[in-house]
Length: 215
Image (cartoon, rainbow, N blue to C red):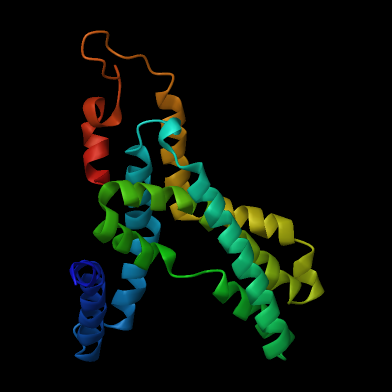
């Protein structure tokens, strides 16, 4: 029973927020234009900031659970195979096969997975989830561009590698994760105070006017 209650406390807040959003939309309190702008703010600003902060909170590269990242990569490859098989045997329209496949390998991980991880495991779990995005976002977005191009006309296939690369490096959540990972690596070269054993320079201590808004 205690496990069941713990699961409810982790899942119900997300369900309640989804229900609240549905109610606000149904009553006309918010409209499609608001949702379009809110989605852009979350995807381009809020989510990258959250992922950056969670990655930055990892003390060093040695604290990273690389097996979790490997598991994530293998999981996406499995989803890709499932998507290709499902589209091949159940979708007749060639162009729709790409759409179905990319839909399978692009789960709503960032919106649902991150708050669920926070509710279940706290900050450390969110940090691990953020590390997973370092693998999952480039792979899922890259495979999406590839399958959509492969199942489209020949003119788009010529630029498939360029499209994949540009879409990955321009993805805001990937930028947030990449910057956080870069700062973790640079942190290893920053000397520490011999008395306090703290870094002589850090964002939170020396540049709080930048770090605080990210929080």
